[in-house]
Image (cartoon, rainbow, N blue to C red; front, side):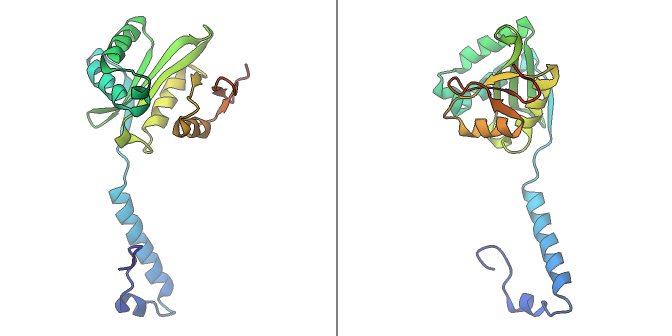
Length: 184
């Protein structure tokens, strides 16, 4: 095997006679593709409404993410905030893989200047990133209309994520952004 995982043995090279080259190459590519898809198949994620029984798990999830740790957002504070949000009937969604909560979206219905839904938190566990959980949560959060959100200037991954989902910077000095479909 070579460094790239390709079979460089004499047997493999002999199979590549002009008449069988394309067949052998296609079979090898299909074999590699099947191996990759079996190893890297993303978990099935479904999004559902937050339940009060999700409180502890969701608070633990958010407080375990380095970005929220940087802001000093502790598990206890997050749990208090989520409990208050549930009482106010803010839009709270969780992403679930199997029976495990892997993400949370929290939208304040009129949190953006008292006029627009504001995405306060979109948090996804590291194990579910780049596997559709964030996109599914964002889609669920957007169900009530366009969102206003803030992204820290140092959060490059977050900025790329929102840009890939159609968000633009609104005020460069403040880091505001909005969905392309609405002008403010």
